[in-house]
Length: 465
Image (cartoon, rainbow, N blue to C red):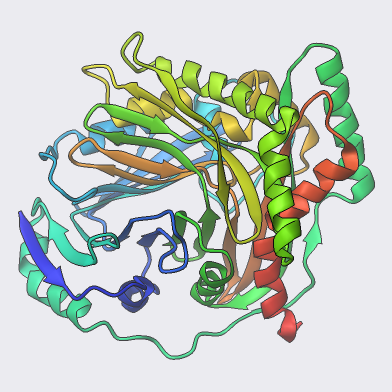
């Protein structure tokens, strides 16, 4: 194994900046130094293989790039990734990640798992899955204040380029000031009246017994130009969170400010941390504390949280040892820059012979952002939301060659698609769970509270409109 010690800095964006412009460069960011919850940052680049999954006329196919060749497969994308990782086996060490698969699994990949109608408008430029296999990584441990460049050395190219990689991260060159600007106002794909109509339809479905909860979201978008890395740096400044990510796939760039863990696997230990229950933050300390107390005491929010805990217990049970799944903690208060949340912790033990990817497929997409029952909620989402969700409510993260995994729920997440040069569209979604006693105005306001960090970033760059 190759290990090189790097100088520690509390802001790991300094280490990522020299490669931020390169396609397939990815920064899994714990939001430090401002976020109090995260510990590790992971930086990868130059994958030696990749899988991109697309949908064309209701047919799904994957392009697999490896050994300088491109092959096309119509197999299940999760199975493709399992097979791609299988030849590279490594033992666990003291670092969370030393090489493996990193990328995103879009919400729309759920069509490989569930039978869903085709109603909402597609996101033409957003593949269902983009995952690379990486032989080296920079890992920053903020608790121990250490940083390493590491590799299992599976690829000869890594050995040949090791000295250059060490020099790159020993002496990171910060780029000149980056430019990013909106070139149109931010707009939603739902007016308040349209949201109200969809909200009332959900309430009707609940009253008829179709479902108990549905997560309903609206999409915000604007034209923009420039380097989205600048927008991401603003996002991590105004709203640091423990499961952030910046992913550069060339014409497609993803900026995530997620506070929510989806699935973690260490050895055979499985953990998920669903979020359900939200209140806004306030600049007035007394009012802010009252919001937090109201959330912790809310019977409605605790019931919603418990509903999703039960859903996730069922999902992870598919690939965990019988009797091992339990809710360790319920209704923990976590406070972020723009909202308070209720978080619960569910754990289990992965079955012998099952992989982290098997677990991911069995739980995909996360129940905290669909509703319950999951399949019916997803069918209703497809019916009522005007656009497909794309990356929103999918998952980002890593799957190590050692079998480990850590992934987020892709909320508070924007996608920038460049269409001509550096000009394109930036879009993001915000939603909330609707139950029988939900109130229209409060639910609509919650979507705006959750979107506030990204809307703040958009306002900052609005100066050029």
